[in-house]
Structure formats: C-alpha cells, structure tokens
Image (cartoon, rainbow, N blue to C red; front, side):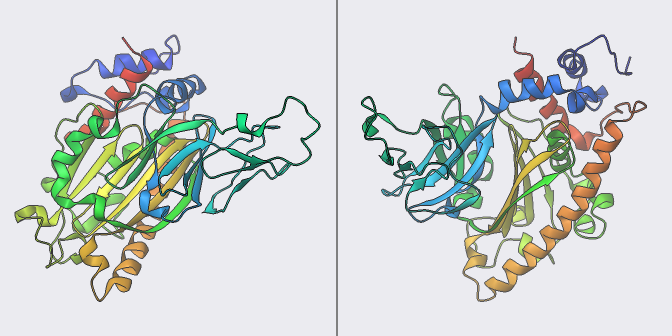
Amino acid sequence: MTRHDTTLSPMAELARNVAQPFESARAMPKSVYTDPAFLEAELSQIFAKDWFCVGRADMLTEPGDYTTLSLAGQPIMVIRDREGALRAQSNVCLHRMSTLLEGSGNTRAIVCPYHAWTYNLDGNLRGAPAMTKNDEFCKDNYRLPQVRCEEWLGWIMVTLNPDAPAVADQLSKVEDLVGDFGMENYSQTFFETHTWDTNWKVLAENFMESYHLPVCHAGTIGGLSKLDEMVCPPGEEAFNYHWILKEEHFKLANAHPTNTRIEGERRRTTFLLAIYPSLLITLTPGYFWYLSLHPNGVGKVDIRFGGGMAPEFVNDPDAQSHFEAVKALLDDVNVEDRGCTEKVYAGLCSTMAEPGHLSHLERPNYEFAHYLNNRVNPS
C-alpha cells in the first residue's frame, strides 16, 4: 500500500517506508515534508541534539568577527574572542531578553540594542547603565550561556546537546574518505544566506542525488557528469556520500597541476558529502561549495551558502578569475536548484501526490530516510 494513510502519524508513515529494502524502496511519504507534527519532532530530536554547521572558520578570522543564527528556536552567536578562540553563546540579553547581534560582522563588544547592557566577547557582562540602585544586581553574576562549539576540518560546528559525541570522533570516516583533499586548507571566498520556498529535506535530498543533474542542470553542469559514472555506496551512521567524475576539460573541478596530494582518478573526482542533519558539501580537488540548512516552518528553508577554492587555485596567478568563474557557475546552479526544489514542494502539497520508487542513483536518499527515522522514532 503506497497511498497516504491518514490514520497513521507522519512518524509511523516514515517507519513503514524505511522498513522496505533498498531494492524496492520508495521516496518518503509526503507527510514527512508537510506535517507540522513532523517538523516539531525534527526540531526537538534532530536540530536540538545533533551538530549543526554554521559555516567555515575562516569567515571569522579577527577578534570580534561574528555570525548569528537560530538553531531549534534558540538565537545563537558564534564569535572570535580576544584570545582567538571560536566561541558560541546565547544571543539573548540577560536583562529584558532582547536579541543582541544580527547577521554577520565585527564588533568590539556585544551591546544590547534595547538598554545598552554591554558584554565582553567571552559573554561576561561588562557594564549596565542605571543599575546602581538595585541592591541585588552584580554584573559579575551575569554571563551569556555558552554553547558547545568545535572546529572540524575548517568547519564551525555547534550543538545544544551537552552529550553529543565530539565531531572529530563522529565524523572520522569522512576524514578517511577525503583526507587527501585537505579540505581544512580550502579558503572560503563567499558566504550568503537565503530562504527558499521548499521543505528543508527536499533541498537536502536534491543535493544527495545526482540523478537530476542532466535534466535540472542542463544549462550548467548537467553535461559535465554521466549517470553511468556515478557511484552511490551505502551510507554511514553520521553521513552519506556519492561521487562523480568530472570531465578533464573542467579545469576548476580537477586537481591543479601543482597539487601532489591527490593521485590517479581522484584528481577528477567530485565527492558529494551529506553530513547529517543538513551540511551538504560538494568537494572537488579545485573548489568546494556547501549548503547548511535549517527548517523555517514546513514550507521554507533557511540556507547558509558558501564556497571557495583549494589552496593551489588560491595561490594561482589567475586566482581572481577562478573565484569569479566558480561563483558565477554556482549562482546559475542555484537558480536551477531553486526552481526544481520549489516545484517538488508544490507537488508534495497536492492531494494526488504519491511517492514513487527510487532509482539506484538515489541510494543516499534512502540512507537519509533511515537517519531521520532513527531520530524521530528512537527504539
């Protein structure tokens, strides 16, 4: 039976869906994308508990550099402190609870826009106007709540969960898989935020399979990859992946002539890494780009979008033209992906929509469904 069963919760529908072996698997039921109850389970069981990627560490290089986000409903800032360490902490004032910083930027101190309570970069309260007549007030008792923050291969990772395993331990198999690429040494050259009109999982799944490339990306990268050269192995507990081979004439996706780390066919291999829940990395020997996704209701997704170059291309005499070429390509690819993923969400909202069988090239989507099921339906 494939038709949506209104007597089952979306969590139960997903459990039934993943009970099928991959050889007969179908796409996830539409309630997983459209039901507010499933979103609430995701926020409490996934985004409030797993590691979330904020971006690249080299986007925050100087003391006072910061970026802000909302994680499972919690306003958070990540800031480079005076000692040079990355620090994540609450972005809510401890007085009347206004949010403090907005967007990204640089600041010498954290000043509340409501009553000018002022915090040092480490979250300790520096001063508060007109508080001397409150006998109980002592600024030394105030510090912004701290949030776990770790840097891993150049990525800034945060979690609200004090018991989450260390990122390096959880993702050690990623290092085994792509360690020769030296991802930690890639330089970010752009960072943007966007909101699209689709469910976050639709965009995540779009990234996880390259089955759509020849059609959705016919105007850009669709002709640079061949379906019969895509390899989609079973995933790991904390991530899934697949790889494709890029044509040798696509120079930016191939290893630079001065790159001696990567050998053989890997010099033209592109890895697509989906690190749960929502860090999506396209890693080539020449450049990288990524999306970090967070739900904004069932029908919208907030996107942290960035990318850059491998060190050999950064140090190349034509570096600036390389940056511009990659950014122009990725902007065009994003336009195509937005059109496709917003159409999928519109279709999911139809009463006549039903999930079909998966291609062998959609193995990562099957793995993703199992990850989601394990989180929202813990045994």
